[in-house]
Length: 474
Ligand SMILES: [Zn+2]
Image (tube, rainbow, N blue to C red):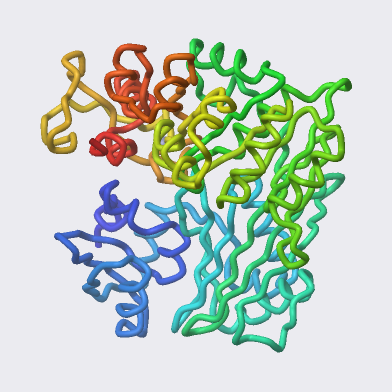
């Protein structure tokens, strides 16, 4: 018997990334090959049929099972995978400490959300890391209900109610640190799915300097927030980092001489010296109601979580007209789209022109892991069809995955911005509703999201894949 040949099966990297270490140990599977949408696995699992069905759901592809001896599986697993989590028996033993561990681990990873989802044979736990979900643990179906109950008790939810979605909150203490977790439950086919959102992350380090503004953009932005009145709007889809930009801005504007009020839903970070108010739609304390109350509180700066409707837009304009600096976010795709959106929200063009000082669009882009990113010669097919590849690109970097980046190929994120200052001539154009925005952007040399995205590909900060949607957005 040749021991070497057994332990020496090294799973190719692209296959290894398909299965986490926990999954490999939990299911006792070793990936062998992948063809189109079919993955071949070796296993010593005694119930290959269930295994096949379960993994098909979890991995989202067709599974072919090849039986293997326990001895070989054991050696393949230990050779290829590092065991990173508590074993199932440990979990049972420390059942009530599992939740604690789960939350502290998520926090250590810098994760924003924990998803727990039951399936027919087991439950999986995923963390949102840098905006993408990644599986971290699997829990057996016998243990899951205990975990659910524990979370529901701690967050003040009704444990007997399993058929309705519920929302609650947990205040989590870890040493001297305390932070809030928003809990949401939802009935699914095999039980309740739970999402924990970790709030009140430490914002001490969040500074405008570290977000991703270029030097020039930052100068422009700092100039704009110095204005004692007017509106600055930040647009982008959910999860594009708008709130972080706003908080970093407030932190910079926060002075003893300034009264800052915020209305938020939810309050994600707490900031010393700033009056933060939680939106309460159940008692009709919505954005417009809060703004109305704020105006009687002698504010200098007002932050409105989001401009969602005509009434909020009208109140925000009113606040800006009466001598306040208003900061807010809005769901649009570009800095210019924000202007059109507000006109759709029935804000008169002349008022808009008078109040908006700056419109910003932003996205979050994952940064390639510097430990494993790999250089590749650029080919036309790497880019979206119709995209004009800049001449200076001869190569770019692709994501690979290593232990340092939890096999995602990425580590950390960076914001990219598109900044549209509302200058006099733009004001006139908005007033008369006559603007060729493309010509304007070109003439003014405004760096669009797309321009900034490609800049990050050129300097190797991110991959083409990560900004693909922005590049094809033409
Ligand atoms: Zn890596």
